[in-house]
Image (cartoon, rainbow, N blue to C red; front, top):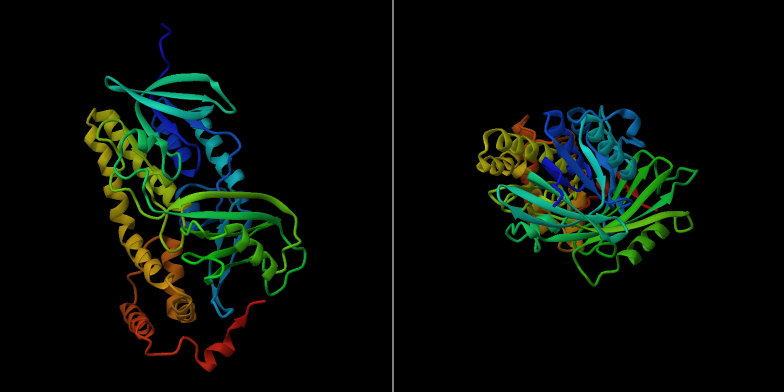
Length: 410
């Protein structure tokens, strides 16, 4: 028998999470194989906060656009502008961004392979991974590793085969978007430096729809957990609303987006997951790139500890560290999604809250820095009281003065 190739770590999936984990472990001197499908691009708005750019050394030339404001659009078509003071949100095209991360991992030392994961099998103190060539299921390859990292997306095959609890039943929103050619002329319905978020039941009964500029193109999409809801019909209606129904469509993409972290990321032996496979997409916002890369960094740290010490219990520390830093944000966003997205009446109130300058400032601080702001407790109390008043219908969602200050979306 031919002796199998042996690696310290095999990473299945080459998106932001998998490429980050492979890069970090290769930088530590470990023998890493990075396995990724060819040609798949995940549907994604492509927004990355300044903290991601800093923490993961992302060169500025990867940004296809810089966003300096967001517009929240209510069911009654009232738009609330939320400017970013003294900063911006970077936008990336996932096919370019993900490839940069994979290429960087390979340059650092990871052995990059193209193929489709098929199975994993325990073999003593190691794991055997079998994959086939992309487009040819008959050509099989089997390699061995001391540890496997699953970064293969929502409802991960790696997580399922490792028998991680509820891996196949993690709650998901199905996201769909169309990449279109951006218009040459800027108008009030489309700005190349503004992200528009539509909180309208007709465009998504339980999530939101979006228009995100990408420089020469734009991402127009929506998401819903309602299997009977027409995502394509919703995007078509949104394109017509903003006058881009006639724009050239570059491509269409769809995929499930998990909205709840798995209760267990590792099998206690030699398999662990990160990114969408671990369910670390923020509820309410659906933001995933930063959390995918952050979870991958924590996983890489835990895998390094396990490889050096020989103690598989180190794998469980990745989830604990991640939730220590981000669990409170996920909890709050989960409550927001559960309550505010249930009806257009509540969505109307939610958007009206966004007009408050204190809400805007604290929202952007939390998003840009990826932590809840602890400054100015008086503002937090003020916001809490306003939210409570809205929750119990003690105040109207729009006052005359407020409505006059807002923009009607086209």
